[in-house]
Image (cartoon, rainbow, N blue to C red):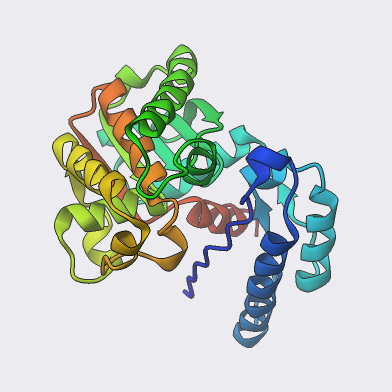
Length: 278
């Protein structure tokens, strides 16, 4: 299996402008062209392209649809928050034993975070518009962010978590599963890894105290200090503080003692759904 990840920041500025910027669309186009070449080299017969929060919110999504269709030859599926949550849950729990459930899956993305409760199937879910990119653009503007900016970001996440708790009975979960780049990067930092090692991160556990420590350290760093961290993906340097803050807020508000970290995510859910259809 070939797995590749690019951070193109498609949602950059969407929270403020409501549109996908030309720069973000161009970064996405370049990545898609490379993906199309890879698909051709691997002899891919079926392609599914899923778009999430940023595209849902963009008034010019038709430009994105035309771009994807032109490069990949398939139209992107702009999924709802509920559909995104279900795909993330499917990917994150595929390798887990249902006997250990119910699971609370927390997928911290760029524009939104999905909360999903279930065992073999989804019992309850909610997607809220607090993600690492959106939170950074709304609040964490200084380098490093001020105490006032951090407090405003925490209040934003706390308001979203109030909505989550009204819909998703998180207290039923026996295991909390965190996924996507913000969570895996926090896990890598908590472990003190000398490089980003997916095999060491996948299914590792990070305690509440580790999450708090790493988040506080990231929010106190300058951009240059974050960029120098050996596990830091260049595309996450600007937004990792926001992502870590979302994770810490979840841990604190939901009373989580630890989080199980998964490298399996929405991509795996998408692939699994395609294999089931064939």
